[in-house]
Image (cartoon, rainbow, N blue to C red; front, side, top):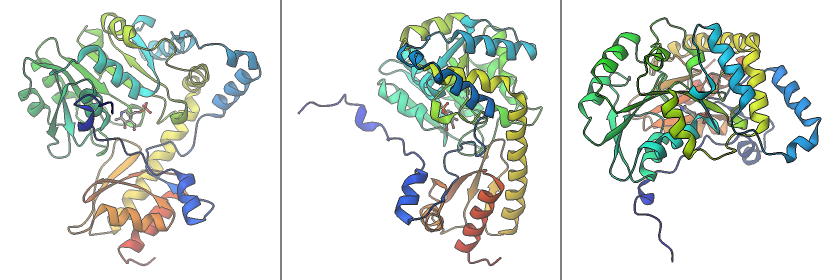
Length: 371
Ligand SMILES: Cc1ncc(COP(=O)(O)O)c(C=O)c1O
């Protein structure tokens, strides 16, 4: 039988959150609560839905290949960034089938067999998958105090290091690295290494200490900033994200990119999403309210700890001898889907009010706490 490449067997397959329909089928219930994949519980802006409907009103358009360059979406991005005082041109932007695909494209562009990429552990698991799939070596540096150990990452650099991944804020911990320490990291970083700043949760961050990574792009550094429409913009199903880097980097990545990697509906939807700032504000407000409620309720469960989050999810550390698998299964029976994130850790997405309440109820039940 045909054999896969030797490194394929080393890849840990990605385990997605359990789908809501599957749980409903299994339990014979109508409304399961999914807080497992950091999705946006409010969904996209009504203006996005309208834009998609308008697109579908000309069905012949479905027969046309998308405009691979994403001209109109790039215009909307340039406009949005220009309002924030950042001048971008189309040549500085690459669109991806989710920011996930951009991770893959960057790795294919810069990592060959034996090359190294540095990333944190735990962090977004796709980095290692992608690097290993190219025959590269994924060097995983444990978090320090639940945050990226930027100094430790610098110490692990060798002549073969090509990429450093920093998820900021990090998934699954929801923690972030601050402006000052990032500045130090960038000052000490040797040349010819690409820093991939994965800012999938960027819109949720609400502290002025957040690193202004666009500054390093403006300085011409080897940095690729990744953002997505899957989270705060509520478009996870359409698969669309974008990367910002200097022209020379985007040009090389475009050689690897499939010609029609983002579909027209996703482009139309993302453009409309960017233009509805009010909806984004509402999403962020609901997330903040949900976070406050969950903090308040989690504080009452004395046996657990949780990490303050800069995102739309919370990382919870269970008591000793409590397995995340047991919690996952117990909550699942109540129709609440969360995500085990380690042997004793779970990750819970912040949902709508009634979803958060359902989680707290089933979580308290697991610990035999009434109320
Ligand atoms: C840190 C991080 N990066 C990237 C992604 C991928 O997002 P996308 O849907 O844009 O591919 C995720 C998704 O969960 C994530 O948590």
